Structure formats: structure tokens, C-alpha cells
Length: 262
Image (cartoon, rainbow, N blue to C red):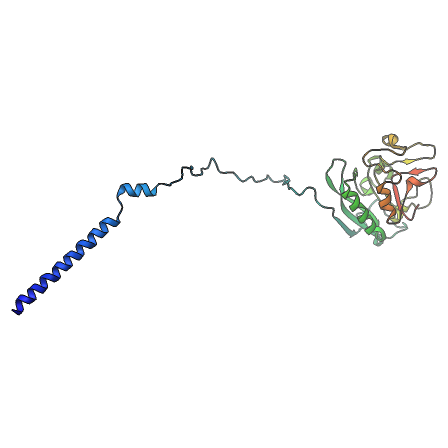
């Protein structure tokens, strides 16, 4: 009797085991997709084409030596004031000048050119007026008021005539005043000549020494780089205590500004 019960229980257990295995097998079969279903699931639902190399926007790299354009426009005005050396002023300074090298300063600064572009120029002035010049030329640059060039007179071996002929804006030069044996204000670094072609030195008889400046001999003249009586350039210098040679009686020196006159 006992053997009969054991056999019956054993058969029942085996039947349950077989049934569970069958169910597990069926569940596995149901959860696995068919090959057709796998292909359908793998396909994207969007009809948009995938990006290719042909539709990718390339990144442009500027070639060496070319300027990278920026949307911010021209650079802001900048200026640097530095001590000068004897080598720098090889032609424009010598022993016996009324100012020592230690009292002069080199200004390297931005100016706006006749080509409507920014440039970097150099002026040497007395250290006592260096801040004046930086302040005034900052305003000229912000106005986009054009200057032809700005080089040390030493580029022309200290020759004032050659510097003027080249329409060069310059300041310090240890030389006498025009037509005089006395020191010019330029010899102290207290004067500056701006665009000498557009603003010539005019003798009392109306003549000019440089032929390229003859058409600018009378005032007022409406042209780029010209200084006229009462204009904003004159007022900018006057605000710092500088006088304009265009107000002299008889001789007119339209290019010339000096601290305290003369």
C-alpha cells in the first residue's frame, strides 16, 4: 500500500515538472519576435534621410597671414607711452638740444587712415604732454578723422622738409623755428604738425613751400583731414591748453599745434 502511494506521488511530481517545462518553453517561443517582426522594428519610422558627408557644412580654416573678419568692427583706440633711446632718435636729437632724452616719451598709438582703416603710428613728445596727446588722438580716432601717416621724423633723417613733403604727422624734432634762429616748440617736444599737405604753412604773401599743398592754402576748405577755424579738432586741442597756428596773424601754420603757443 505504501509502495502504491509512493509511485502515485512520483508520477504526479514528474507530470508537474513536464508541465512547467512545457509552459516555459512556450513562453520563450512567444517572447521571441519573428524575423519579419525584427526587420520591421529595426526600420526608422521617419522618412528623413540620414546626414551624409555631402550635406555636412565644412568648417573653414583661414589661411596663415589672413585676417579673420569679426562682426565687432574696427579695433578700439589703443596707446602706449614708453621712454625713448638715443638710437631711436638718431637724427632728431643731439647733445645741446633744449630737452633731455629722459624728458621725452614715445607714443605708439592707433590712428584712422585716409583709406578708412586703422593703423598704428608713432610720435615723440615731451613727457609733460604725453597724456594730452593720447586723449586728443583718442577723440580723433573715435571720430574717424583721417591722418595720412604718423612716423618719427627720424624716418626722414630728421629732415623737416622731407617729412612734410611725405604728408607725415610728426612732433619732436630738435630744430629752430621756421625762419628763426630760436628753438622751435618742436625742439622741446611741445608741438605737433598734423597732415601738413592738407594743412600747409602759408607765408604772409600767401605762398607755400610744397607744391602738393597749394590747393589747401586758403580757409575754409572742406576736405578730409583739413583743419578749419573753430572746428572740433581745434577745440579738442584748445581744451588741453594747446594753440593752433591757423590763428596766427600774417603767417598761417595750419598744421601746427603747440602747448602754450609758439
